[in-house]
Length: 161
View: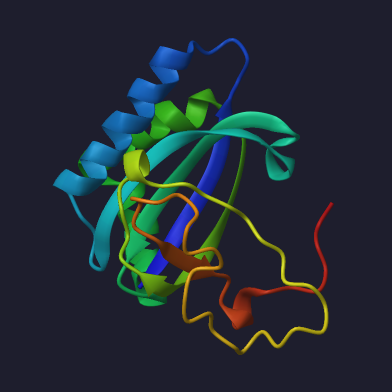
């Protein structure tokens, strides 16, 4: 299983409620017209992150059966009944960044039951090892725990500025 995660923020002049409703309509359209390999999608607001110019925004998760499901998802998002919903939210978006993440362990849970922590692997630690348990088993008691990691083939030594 893969997660396509897309961070985005609206133009300053776009009303928050309008933007959130546009996101919800687009994701509902994806669910009603699922592409091959599509599992589910959801979104929640996030605090300021570096990849959104240190501004708050939204984090969309789209669960896919595998990397082969990206092409159909891209095609379904911009055609048919889903296209108008995509076009509306895309026209309201000022910035965005996305990536693919491989499922490492745990069962996915809804946004209302999750907490996200982004970790950077220090140099010298083997990227091939897979964590077998949560880093802090007592943290966020009561929440299901799950972990995702960038697939090694999608990691890059260089970042575009």
